[in-house]
Amino acid sequence: MERRATVDPMEVPPSTVTWAYAKMLAASVVAYFILRHFWGRYMLTSFSQLEGHGFVLSGLNHVWFIFAWALGLPLLATLVLRQRYVSNTPRAVQVIKGMWLSVNAGFFEEVLFRGLMFLNAMVMLVFLNWLTEWLVNGGLVKWLYVHWFVPLANWATFHALQPQLMDHRNWVFGVAIVSVTVAFRDEHKYLGFIGWVNSWFIGMVMFWLVFHYGLLTAIVAHAVYDAIIFTIRGLASKKEDAFVTAILRMLRV
Image (cartoon, rainbow, N blue to C red):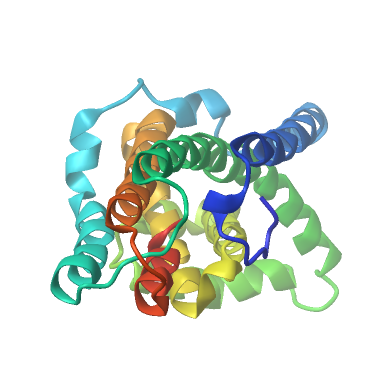
């Protein structure tokens, strides 16, 4: 999908969505192998370590609040406020297509952002920090993140990721988490300001899942989160209404 597209993803052909994700994945894989070959010592973990031990159901239980968030506001809009989303596509088709989009987003975005791009970022951030050492002793990138952005992210996430974020001996690990989550957030600018902020928090939750339960658990959680949004949207579709459209766009990541 286009980065800042305002086009409804349900109106984009499924093959186009998958192809766009596949191209991003291919580019990230190439970058990963190049960076791993020449500067792998700067990657403080490996893709196999991020994979964990497969899908862990209890991991979903620990992030129940994101599913409640995905379910609560759309239900409020559709059942209490009697708002409906407009579409000329049959409801069943919308739900099926929404499931496909959810699986794509769950798999590709987690492998990309919480996997390959996270590992690649460690190398790139060390390089960028080296380039800025003439500005600040120790590097401007390290100074900005370690003293400002990482502590702010740690506070905003209620210290849930403190062991990963605040390990100053391996500063680039926490900096990579924050920088990649910012990139993930910016990929969702088309959702509007609230959706932009929401995407940042969801991205941090997914990192927490990866570190505690593995990448596959995060993939499933992401797909389920999106599936809730798309299912409610599809089943409740009836007529055009800007209010419910804004809520659903805000929540989807």
